[in-house]
Image (tube, rainbow, N blue to C red; front, side):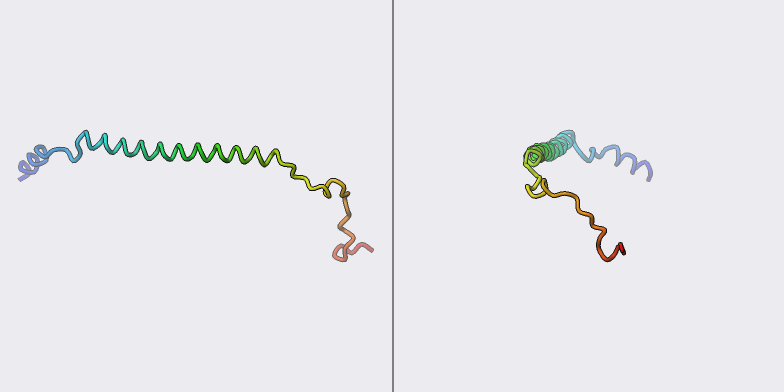
Length: 80
């Protein structure tokens, strides 16, 4: 009985041929290549956006003239 099982497993071909393995590897390479291209493209776009935002004048005109105001004069701080 064990001999029958052993001969059966030895005679059966492999579950996957070499061409099947190559096909699966090609599909995996294509999918990861697409993901890599999309990631590089997104990184490039984010870098351009970051440079654009850094070049913008972010300071408001009224902020430049404003001086420090003491906020501890309120009723919560009990300054009498």
